[in-house]
Image 1 (cartoon, rainbow, N blue to C red):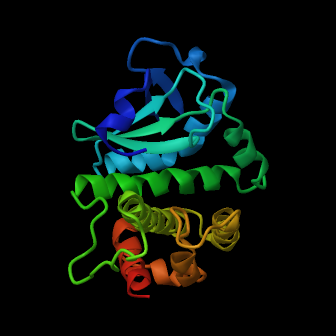
Image 2 (image 1 turned 90 degrees about the horizontal axis):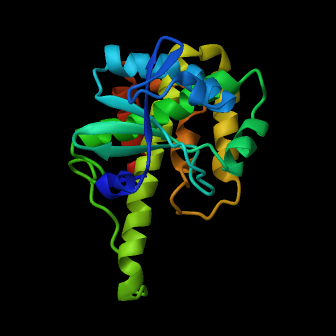
Length: 238
């Protein structure tokens, strides 16, 4: 989910999360949430609390009350200078697929990794760096064989791939810091997710960065964003 236009069309219910309690900022009771939504919000709570209290990110939670088939269960939008972490879980079979694919012993930590991934997008938005290359890096030229209609789509896909790579690294940096005993297993799970139905070079082909992070030691030092940025730049050089 990207930009103002992606969230402007949502009929949404804003949810504030404090500790493990859930309360609506628009007057709707927590009982309006489904058990699955509540479980995901509770699992994400450590990441959300850290983002707000330690990283000082302007982060809101949004739970879509309408059916959202085909949407990513968790995604990020950016509206009026604030990051919107959006759950789209109702009438969405992708949610159950992701739950079923997870070992129960990894489930809570995997949801934290996914939420931390979205924090990476939030940081890039706030820095005004979304879709941009870091200083000193030059993006590859658009293949000349592409038609004019496909050139922008190719550029968007390549840029999205870079951002997804950065997000995955932030998620893994969070895991190294908060769940070091699960790092190897969660890294393997993420590689499996990114390898499923893989189209090389497509939006979610982040394997070049994941290959650099088999050892959690490469993500040591600094904040989760600083650790991710170091490895992200290595992947860009490759």
